[in-house]
Length: 110
Image 1: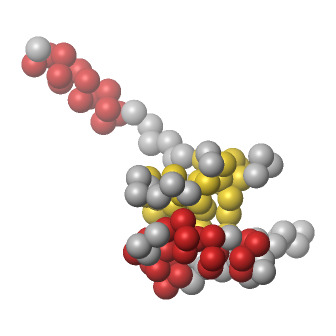
Image 2 (image 1 turned 90 degrees about the horizontal axis):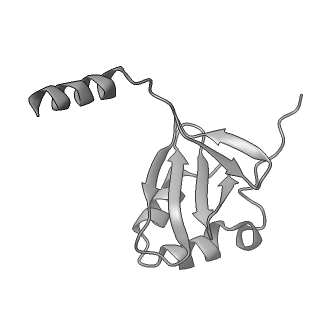
């Protein structure tokens, strides 16, 4: 038993660390290494929320699909996390249709 546990622990400690990547809109892969992600179990709209405060990027899972929002202030991300109804806050304040694309991610020149 101890030998098996030691072997398992050795495998865990020597396994390479691989960051998670999610597909946005079926066309773009985003590495979540710099994002703080939370699985959401208190919303019927949102399943997961990931936020990168340095970039101001918010990635949300709605209906099993991920979408990305850019230039989201930290205060807005905090308000989403603390909202009594995360889905209502998201739908009224962040979702592209509600925000007038204020948080749309523009293509990078190049």
